[in-house]
Length: 367
Image 1 (cartoon, rainbow, N blue to C red):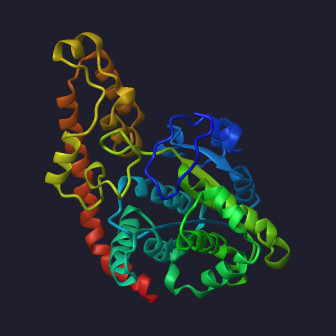
Image 2: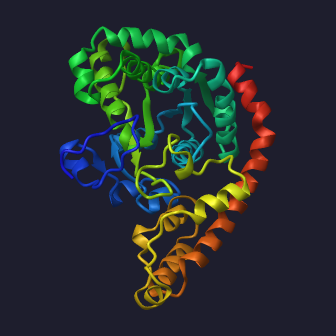
């Protein structure tokens, strides 16, 4: 509804995405944009990546054969979950299809400011998170990875940006917060604009794929880039936004803060079975009603698991939708099929990841 605000550190769902275009000035990922996206994967074809800021300009830079980059990051507070996976897959997509250099921030300082996790503890999680990225397909040959706590250039930028940032600006964007979170905003602006420093070739077109709740960070950083354009030559960073992936309860976005409602990429087969078995569905009250009226697939988190993550084939997805809507399949049968599909995917992913942990350790050690 109009008036809804973003909380980058919260777990609330948006009830309506439409007001984002009129109220916050986001641009739609329409057919005109989609035609320019090379080999669009399921995230683009299915409207999961649904909005952007200046992504059309980023595409134009690529089409002019100018170098382009992609930047995003992760807060190493826990194991990778399916929400994190969406951003990771976008970054890997840009790297593979557009030869974009990936800049990946390990937001360990924000992790401490928001979650109180000591740097030594988050460092272990960061290795696991990066190994997940590599297993998903990130190439270490065309990327730069850093920890906020160890990247002096980011911290220097944060202090520089603070000079032209007022408390009123931060309160207007984020509400009343502790100073640590406010400074993490400045640090994240340093992360986003790091790829445009001379050390990395200077000003360039950078796209930042994020969940829609991260838009305050994007707006703030674009404002900072404009204020410091004369001094640094910054170009306004572009962004793409994906829709929220709901928790298994269906009541909030999938978040690290909700252990029972989240699927992580480290879950074993038994945990996956228990979690998905309890997931919210669009099933009817009785078997008879399900057969007569069909299930309400639009409400179903289990269907969304396939839509967002575990069914690459659009025709197979449509067939699952049809079987549900016609009452041909029960929620129990559907869950059984989806559990087996997820377990198979997860087993393959975890086997890849295990082999890539040493590489992740070397990358984070700067070797």
